[in-house]
Length: 131
Image 1 (cartoon, helix red, strand yellow):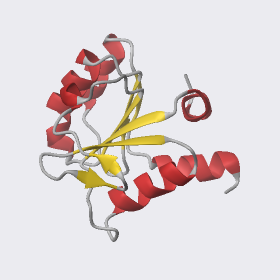
Image 2 (cartoon, helix red, strand yellow):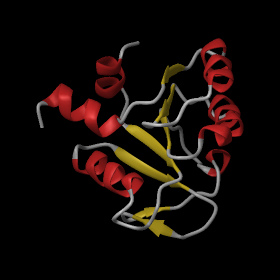
Image 3 (cartoon, one colour):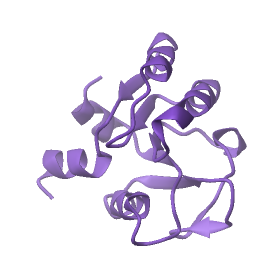
């Protein structure tokens, strides 16, 4: 599935590493996605609520299906996140700009997930929608 199909097919995005700080890229991207009609699911080890949404401490804690796992973590931290994405039945592993992990990406592809690496979901969505 290409990026356009991903962004028009799926609507639920678990944002791993979503910061409560409005000045952080993860917060700006998640806020934009919310305004574009996506359901945002914050995933981080602490906090109760970000952008009006309940914070979950891991992907496994989310009690409903997520489609896209958007990762705002260091490249070396992606392996366990990829394993969780596979375990919860996510459809896409999206690694933000500056984030890549070839081993985790291949693991996800072998498990049937689409993988987008080192790209900004906000920039790609804006480009596709001319927003």
